[in-house]
Structure formats: C-alpha cells, structure tokens
Amino acid sequence: MLVEKHAAETFRLAAAIVGVADAADVTQETFVSAWQQLPKLRDAGAFGPWLRRICVNRSRNWLRSRGRRPRAALEISDEVGNVDLRPDFRAEVEARAILEPAFESLSVDQRAVLALHYSIGLSISEAADALGIRVGTAKSRLSAGLAVLRRELDDPRRDVETEVVT
Image (cartoon, rainbow, N blue to C red; front, side, top):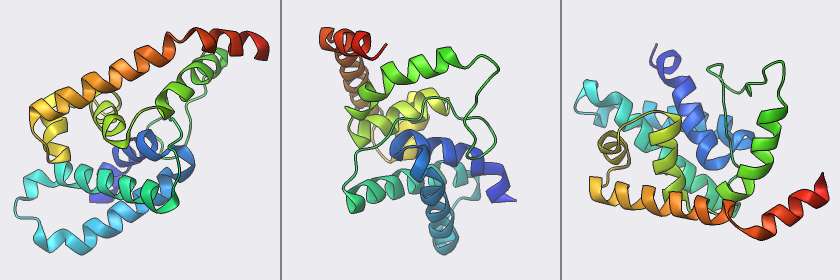
C-alpha cells in the first residue's frame, strides 16, 4: 500500500534528479532501502518526508557511482514512467530542447530542491525537511538554482545553436 501511495511522487523526484532513463532504477532502490530501514522509522506520520530523503540520497549515490550528469525530466505524468504527451506535443518538445541543457547545469542539491518545490509541490520548509537541511539552506539552493537557470536561458549562444538546429 505504501508503494502504491508514494510510487508516482518518488518516481517524479528521482526523474527530476537523475533523469527519466534512470528514475525507475532509483525509485526501486529507494523502496528497497526504505523497506530495509523501516524499523528505524520512529514516526509513521513522517513516512513521506523520510522516503523523499531516501530518494534524494539514492539519486545522489546513483549519479556519483555512475559519474553521470543528470538528464532533465520536465513533465512526468502520474503514471510511473510515462512521459505526458498530449495530442499536440510540439510545445513540450520545444520546451525540453530549451530547458534540458539548462537543467544539466544544476548541481544535484539544486535539482533536489527545485524538484521538491516545483515538481512535487512542497513548500520550502517541507523541502528542507525532506532533505534534512535548514530552511535557509533550502532557500539558498533554490535561489542559486534559479539563478543558474536564468543565466543559462539568457545565454545568447543558446539562441545561435537553436537557430542552427531549426
């Protein structure tokens, strides 16, 4: 029941950090780890934040052990593993082409805060709790991540590359 309840959110969080291609593996590792550590959970009401923290840590370990840069995941549907492609998906494809390189410029910590706050919809306080950090640190990482995205999206070289591709 816990897996059914938290699978979609856990997958979205993993996808935002490691990318869609590896998100299923990280999600599975997250639930295996949670199962193994379940006796250590003191407050059953804190399962959601506890699971998110495990997912973020598993995502970090995944990226570290594979030496990979994360791939961006912009919009994931509620069905685990399925990309949301509406009938006219051109806007999503164009957004992905523009945003994906910018997302790859973020650190894992910045991606985690952005994913928790914007993809999962947690408040800054809830995101900080899920990451086991102070609210001020979460705000700082969020601000820094948004600054990186703004800088990357305002880069005039990106416009030249986009024009060549189209």
